[in-house]
Image (tube, rainbow, N blue to C red; front, side, top):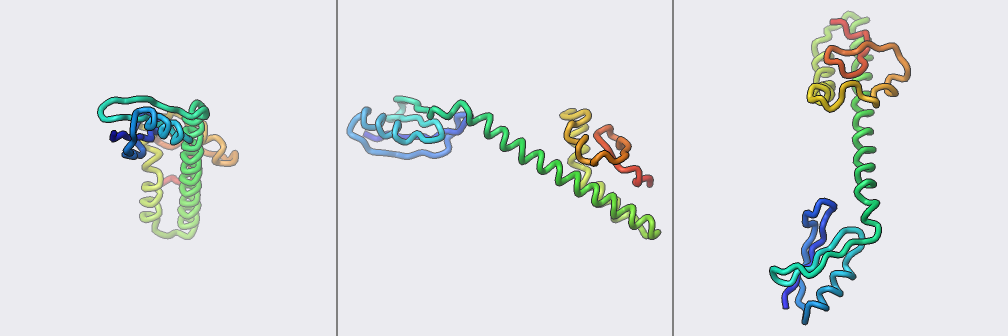
Length: 155
């Protein structure tokens, strides 16, 4: 009898599929129950689903995965804000020296584009993560209303 063991993700999509030859449905069920570790597993014999097995830790996993993704997203936001602030310092330095600012402003525009897109889409109006990034420095709100922007950028 040809049976299949599918490893699923939290949304029910197939992560992995194993085709097995077994003598009966009970043998397939035993193999399926042994295969469950972290992800849910479904056992099928032909077109018929025999069982779905889930680990005991499954209830905690979606939130922990979401938390991990949130940590990564927050890191990307911090890094983006650091790059913007570094570019603002470069612009201030070039301005003091009386040099051409066109390239520096175009780089700043590229760095700020993702933030503008997020703010214009309505995902954030005044993001909480903005408050801690400027270390209490005096800042004005930029033209799109999405967080602080240095006062040095008067074009």
